[in-house]
Length: 531
Image (cartoon, rainbow, N blue to C red):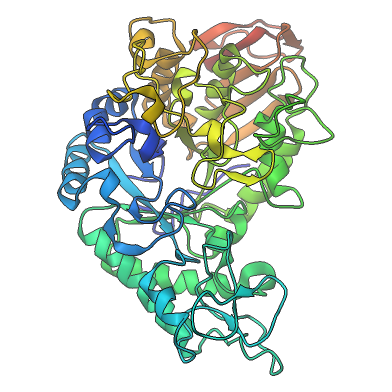
């Protein structure tokens, strides 16, 4: 499990970055309309700088009718007015860069809104092949909303028609299955390159690409999709060598091979890909289906100690061997699509060993806004801008307003709370940034110390080797042959008999000790040691 030193074009600034996800409508509202905006993000850049963040991924902020919270783009070259102006965005980018923070945009590459001018035109012109149109009913297609006869293919919700990047396997009897080198697919590839170039020239440092795997259809192994992204990556590398591409793919081996600098381990994908993340973080509350659950097994970060890290470790070994230092694997705390670390029965106390693991493992850590203070997944919320995928599975619980202070509106907005984008967590004990900044023992201060420790000791980052010493409770691993980490995410103390670590020097510990005969860690404890 030793990564190579070769970075294969990964910019130095990104190679061991700490990522932070901002859901813009929920982060900070500067103008009192109840919806977060660019100026609100700018006002809180000092928080991110103090924390130690290197790059901020902002969920889609393009012009949109918001049937899917901005993942239905109506204009790739303008920002949604609810977030502010182009000047507000430029100010955000400049102020972030001044603090050493890069801004990444969320690029929706595989589809647009059905209100995008491209689709409006395509739905009225039978010669327009920018989207995928069938001349007869076909599985997964929907009737035309315009004067054009036929049926279009959505990419996710019906309001998100799939852009035509061709099919890996055309068929004569299904003329809508165009080859990848047909004019429509070529035009869309050119358009993607133009969109990326436009924003990079305005100071954006790269993109997290939504559903990056979904472009070429009927593409086993995503071979043609990989060729497409490698083509785009080559152009990007030539014009913007410091820019990065991060994929929502959930399969780092395939995504890095397709030209991405990094890919997230995610809650979906198979046969093992989704299980890798779910076996770490997910919980089952039993009643609320608003978060994803790992059916048939307990996750490793389970208070009762009923899980195992082996599913994750096996997936990590497989992905790391395939990536071979050509890119990075990113491990998120959570994101806007699945449950937070603090979810169901899991408490903020359990987030402490989770962050100790996340920030000492050789992945690119990605922190979902608010996880650094232990914000919880809020169940039983109404559907908001497509947050409910199917009845009972609602993503809104991970998208609630950031909790900045203990005032009634949590410092998110001066608007009346009934005008907030989503309701605040109603728990009277909800955590907030201001209170935790004032408490050196808080989760927020711990996350900051762990990030600082990672940056002070390169062997704890992505470049250091990892060797697992014990894969139960506690999980024990060496980093770069120079550091030892022990993590116990269960409620009860855990001990493992491994000799040779009695002289380990504590760097940052909470209830962990090394003796000549073994390692003992209290419940929800951890230790980072220098050998």
